[in-house]
Amino acid sequence: MTEPGGSPRRKRMPRAEREQQILAAAEEVFAERGFQATSMDEVSLRVGVSKPMLYEYFTSKEGLLLACVARIRADLHSVTLEAVAGAEKDGPRAVLEAGLEAYFDFADRHGRAWAVLLNESVIVAGPAEEAIEAIRGQQTRLIQAALSRWLPAASPERIAVFAHALIGAGERVARWRLREGAGIKPRESAALLADAFWPGFAVAAGLPMGQESAKRA
Figure 1 (tube, rainbow, N blue to C red):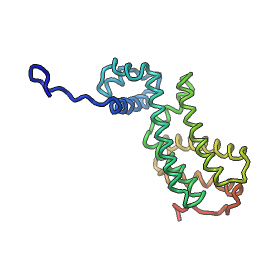
Figure 2: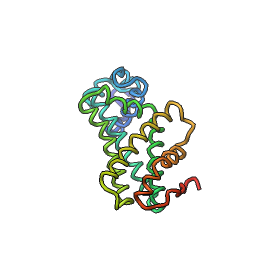
Figure 3: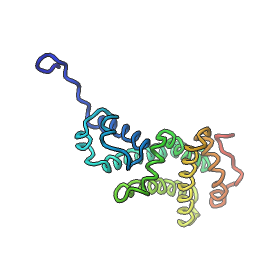
């Protein structure tokens, strides 16, 4: 189709596809600049849309950050669930490693944006802080559900401590890998972290503490 006068009309991108394009660009800018230093002008230039369109889609810079966090949260939940479900047949150690590997692979794919967003809770108050913390809560509940299946005799308090400890340790290892340990692959990182936690899990489940990872066998 052409505009009056003969010039071709540019095909309009579907809204959902445009939103994903904007969020991908915004994630890059947040990773490079951090939330405070990021401007809507820079995001609009990066993605190639007008600044009014950004405001039409996301209302504000904080709204854009919230949308980025929601996108990351959904992605992390999806890949972790898939990894854990795929390892169920191989036993609890395999489930533990699969979940950790999915997390580290996710952190690698999102790169510095993941580290920046984790740190934004320190400087962004209100809904953004709550949304970022909700990612941790989501993963904690997922881990608690998995541990409850494998450790039916463990108390809720033990399960909660295990889950929160894994989340905290996973974040620290992910940040370290970003700064210094990039040469260590997600699978190896998962196995090493699982080694640190497996004795406690094994005792609670009545399993042999010396059980080796199937991935390294």
